[in-house]
Image (tube, rainbow, N blue to C red; front, side, top):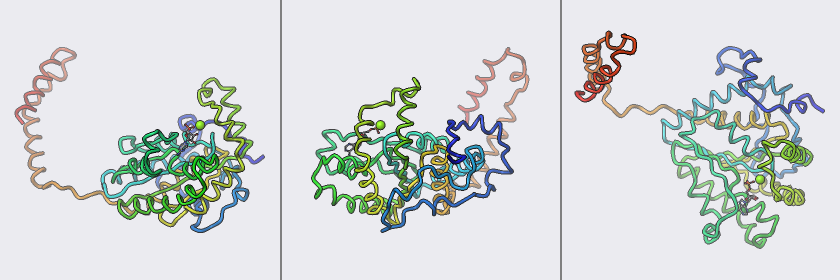
Length: 340
Ligand code: AMP
Ligand code: MG
């Protein structure tokens, strides 16, 4: 058992920051390894999942040792997303796939601790509705693609149509087998036409880790709501899913929309790898704050006029007298606003 396998504690930034000394400004932290290159599936590369160790945790000795890096990534992600929101020229689509209990929800929670939810949407794809099934399989997906300035996270996605649909033969092979190219085309459209950065994460857990997580759901009353019969049913198709995932990675990891196969037995490492890859990619976009559209000289004159007026009408006695004149303070403010 590796050192990091013993670190199964749930990540709690508060408890860790209390214990861990964060070196210098977070921005200047050096990255221990470049997980972006390491886990990217090169276009056209055949993938054997048995060659990937789901227990891997990079060069980090433990969860605790990775905390400064994790906080640094969250901090950077916040800044970069703010920039993208202000710039409104491009967008990000994060796609999460993996077997049941692989941690898709956990990754969503982790990413959202790093960014402003106002600029982000999370879409969870369930079984298609009757209306969805009346259309092509990409219809329900395209409607949720991110607008410029937005980050959208897909918790499951159009890839279910070459995964669960293939494993359970919900449509004939000649139908699902054409879908890889159609998916690549849709993603190319998003990239070329709407400047969307598409990042796809396959969260890879081992079969014994999945069972351990099912057990935790049984033992822990707070997790029991997650238990579903279908988790056990799908587990029986493990090998078929492995085949379907391998083909998916091989046929749809492209230059414009790459897949990353993330070793996910260790939750903290999974979160760290995903946030590092998102951050690194956003940094490469070299986004710029937009120029202001207003006449700055004119706005400065208005600001100074407002400042002079505020100082002239400011009556400290009203504000400082304990309790007494609150009402008049508000009246004063209201009339100032009205006059302006
Ligand atoms: P969960 O993510 O655990 O809430 O489960 C959602 C369920 O919806 C999973 O069993 C998925 O396999 C299923 N699902 C999602 N997309 C599709 C699809 N296109 N066709 C069939 N089942 C789907
Ligand atoms: Mg589930």
